[in-house]
Length: 151
Image 1 (cartoon, helix red, strand yellow):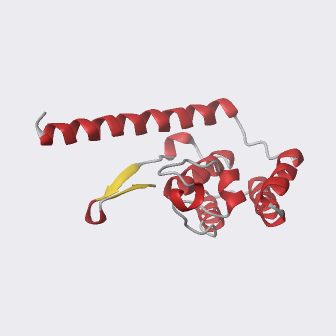
Image 2 (cartoon, rainbow, N blue to C red):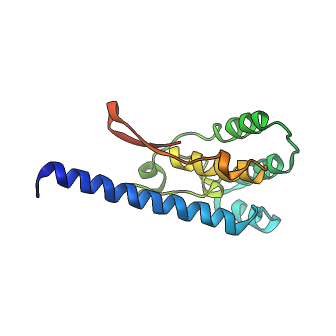
C-alpha cells in the first residue's frame, strides 16, 4: 500500500475511533442524568486514594451545589477548580499509553492529562446547567510538536 494512503487510512481510523469514544462519552452523560457524589462514593475515594483525595472530591461536590448564575462565572469556577490538578501523562499516571480517566479518578490521583481535564470540565459544566449544544470536546493535533491534544 502506498505510504501516503496508509497514513491517511490510519488517521481516518484513529479519527473514527475518537468520534465513537466521544459519542459514547456524551451518551453516557445523557443517560446518567446527573453526577451522584454520594457519601458512600466519597468514603470509597478516601479508602482508595486517601484523605486528600476525599477532600478534593468533597470540594468538587461543593462546587456542583453552588448556585452560579452567569455562564462566564461557571466557566471560570470550573476551569480554576480543575486546573489545580497537576498535569501528568497517562504513562506516568496509569502506566498506559492512553487512558481516559473519570473526574473521580483524576481527583483521586491528583493528576490528569488533557482529555481528563476536558472530560471533567464537560461533566461539571453540564451538571451546572450549561446546555450541551454550547459544549464540545474536540481532538486536535499540535503539528509543531506532533502531539495529540484534547480541549
